[in-house]
Length: 295
Image (tube, rainbow, N blue to C red; front, side, top):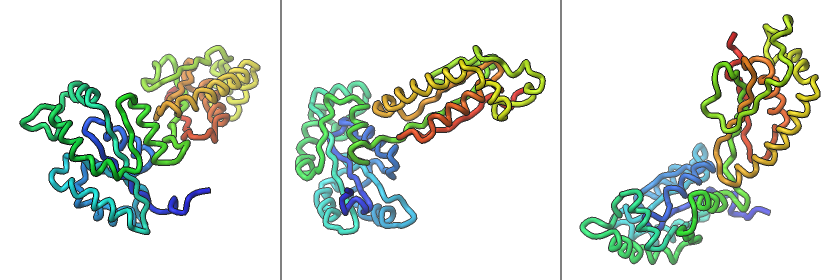
């Protein structure tokens, strides 16, 4: 059963140490449909909430990143956060990201970016000073995430859970694309399957002018036992693979189905595969035909 406050607009405040992964965290929330702003001044948070969360025409899930880049006003975050928590019309979550000193130094070295508090001092000194300044905010956090041992994908999964529930994942956008080998492979293909082993309607005079979108062509292609078996095995394969890609945090997957010209066999099979996979949980599915209009 959902908690009472789950129906309320949700504000997620993401903060923590520079280099701990706040940018990756906010990207994950954005993929979940949160309206996100990075490096928002603390003094503007309440105004931002009033203009977005409370507006019936705006997003009801928003997230902001606030950190040491905000300058001297950043010290007012604890008071601002407590005031937001007292509101009855809003659900507020404070997420604090941190990492050990060695990890932060390595990340700054890899990106070659200066520490925001490192002007006139070393990165180590900036890290130490930032950790001192962040201590009061860390104590307020609803969730603390230590990212030293987390990959980008691990952190993404953590944020998806916090942003959407126990099993939350951003939808996987799956495209099933028919194409003709004679015009080259689709440049965005992740998986390529060849159906040129099926009997070609191109050599049937009454079917040649048609495409695989026509029911007569589809029946011709699917009448072969090999076509039905191919469809069954491919559907099983994708039903196994799709949850694995979703768990890994993959955002896009293109399954390319090819025949010689891209007008008959690949189109019919792509349409059938789209129907077989329709309604797959966690998937936004579309079928497209790259070469169906080519003669």
